Image (cartoon, rainbow, N blue to C red; front, top):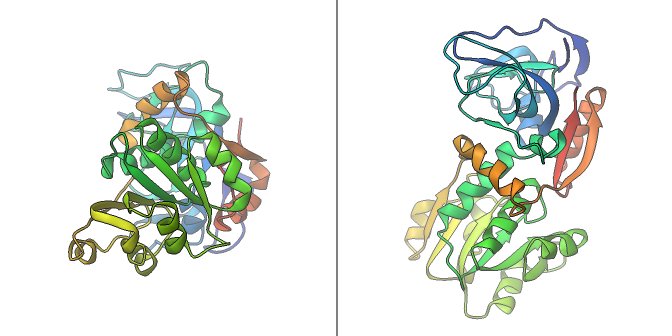
Length: 312
C-alpha cells in the first residue's frame, strides 16, 4: 500500500510502498479515503511525545479517517465488508496511522458514515468533534449563560462554537479577524480579535457583569489564569491543551478541568451533522504526497477550520 511515513523524527516524510496491515481478531481493516489532520500529528511526527508513549518508526501519522471496511476480524459484529465508516485510530502506540491507503482499528471509536456526509467531511470530525462535545459538557452551559471560547476559529473551535450556541448560551468568540464572519455564522454573538486587543480587557468590556464559562483551546496555564478576573464567582473553565491549574482556580472560587476528546461518542457527531445541527468546515485539502505541507500548515496554528488529506 502507499503510505506517508516519517523515518526519522523531526525530518520530512515521504510517500512510499509499505506492507498492507492485516486485521487481527476484534479488528477492522479500513480502506482509507480521507484522513483528518490534527494538532497532534506534527507533534507525533517530530517525536515530541516519544518518552510518554511508544512510537514506531517508520511512523505513519494520522489519527482521524473516513473510508470503507475492507475486512473484519473474528468477533467483530457491528461492521461488515463494504460499510462506509469514520472514526479515530485506537492503537496503543503511534506509528500505524491514517495517512495511508489501509489501516486497522478496533470498533471502539468507529461509526457508520451517513450517506449524506462526504468522506472529506467525515474525516474532519472524530478527534476535533468529540473534543468539542466533551468541552461543552465540561462547562455545563445553560440557556442565558455567557461563554468565552478562546481559539473559536480553529478546527476544534468551530465545533465548540456551534455546540455552545445550540445550548442557548451567549457565545463570545476569541479568534483572528479573518475568522470573525465565519464564527458569527456558527452562532457567536460577539467576536474579539486576539491580535488587536488585550483579551481580558476586551472580555470585560463585552460582558461587564462577568462570564459564566471559558472554553480554551490555546492558552498555557499562566495565560488562562490571567483570564480568571473575567469570570463570575463560581465560573467554570475547560481547557483542551492542559491549560487549567485546578487548585489555582479553586482558590478563586472557580472550577476548572483539563478535557480529553470523548472518542467513544463519535457516533453522536454523525447524527448531528446528518441532521444539520453541526457543520464541518474543511478549509483545505491535500493529496497524500503533500502531507509534509499539511503538517507544516497544521503546526502553524493559522488554519481556520479543518485540514484533510485525500488518500483513496
